[in-house]
Length: 201
Image (cartoon, rainbow, N blue to C red; front, side):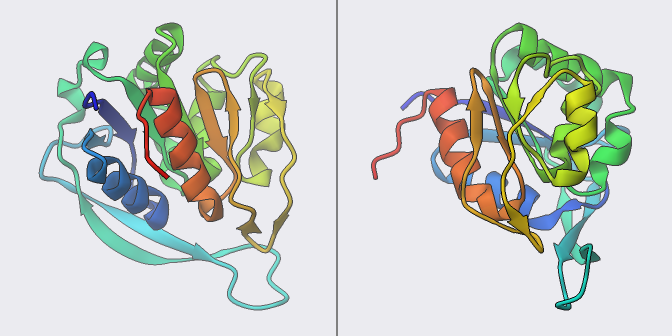
């Protein structure tokens, strides 16, 4: 199996599962994963958050502290041409990293080079500001639907009840998206397929 090099774009209060699970899974199959955040360097930490619907009558999720996650690469040192794929987890980290001009340039590189791209939940927000969703079928957390449509994306409806979702991902060419962390497995399997990684099942 050819080792692939993956870039993960995160920020403070990125969703805990959506950072930890891809990081561990992609490394477990032998790939290199560099997790970076704007304004930070290797060895710095970000705080993750855990999202959950706590009570039956909740109309939105609560946010609890997750882990301190140590970044293993320096954002300013990234050479995007060295990477085979990019992954954007959800959570509140996307609220501010998508305003960084270098993040926009990084994402556009992957789109223009037709490299593997993935996002889950609110991670789709990073793609809505980078002009890479035009004509692409995709999904994210439901709150992102208006932004995706405005960005020219074709929103694929997925049933989400109180944060729970089927383990399903949407693939359109080099782009893999999923609605919530309940679909992490599907998103990772499809992302690996787009990367060209064969997993025996």
